[in-house]
Image (cartoon, rainbow, N blue to C red):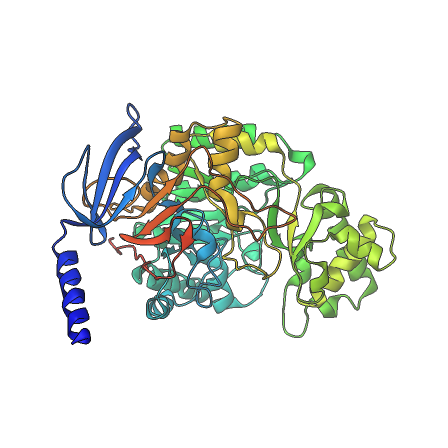
Length: 526
């Protein structure tokens, strides 16, 4: 009898749920419209299924869930146009991104991506993922597949094979081609090779994003190369994580931004993305001369070190980079993030390691330690070598988008750059509310509408009926990043609600692992 009673009540509640007008209504929020004349609107928003059904004042109707958004900004979900999603198969929840309001992220940056993307997409869909993801196909991955680590130009047959791989992955849904010309084996390519492959991506309507060949002493030439690729391949370009590395070049963003403006005035489609920090994160091997790491037959990095003259040249090259590039002339500016060989040094610096080894913290000794680290599978490091003035100048440019360059992170695993947890709330809290570098509407435009347009996401990035219900609700007076360089594993404050495809993924600040995300594929229209 009691079981029958509970069955009747459950059935009644289920029927009532299906009888609701909407699945979710968000009431009394301040909606970010993105319009220049009226960027914010006090209104309600109703969701049915995975889409926005209605937007308006005092919406009538009932819903399964009603959210009172009084005092909150209701924004389209943030779109991270440069994210390192490599851990996604083992961390499909993507909590470090969702807790900062990111509902869509673009992976495959800096020339590195899974291959083939079509198979990888199926794997992700079988797992289920917490946020929406899109991908670029990586030039370095493709070159490595075809040519390994050879330091030479491709033969005609090799270039054809690389072009075919770009075409296949574009056909499978990639949004464009990424390069990492500072990294291997991309550093071994010339501009003609990159133009040829970019033309293939352009034929599918794709974009080109580039970790420039140089971001320090060769920055101007690196930007110019990207502009040439845009012109010759007829492809939209994003100067990704645009920054100025090393004290000799601080202030050079004045010139690079002028180059972007001139290129746009000449008809090229050039944009930028940026993370809001004065430190970068990459492999410690970035300080080693590229020629030293070419692999040809049995000759590799370790073999070269056996020649005392070659070893001396490698040390000299590393010292040059320590002084003029990511080293900043001070071993204390290089902080270990991931160091499998010596995990106790994670969070500490190259200076600390030298002291531990009872070495004077000179650049020469630092170079020798870097060689030892590379022989033991290397390390990921935070490099404190960016000027705040350049950060602000680039941030204010109208075609700069906010992006994390962050790797999906889980508490307790390694010592990541704080951008993995805090990029978007840092812009809203520090650079909007506290420093007033941007207005709130400018920042949100850079986080939502601008990247959606860059990717051609015609149903995301705005709060309009028929658009996907990816939403981030935050308190403009409280939103704040908590992650620091000393204690990175901290989620932000002031983002109580996040919805992905109409599903509540963060509720009153509590994360819900419901895997509502989707793999987004670009239509391969020629």
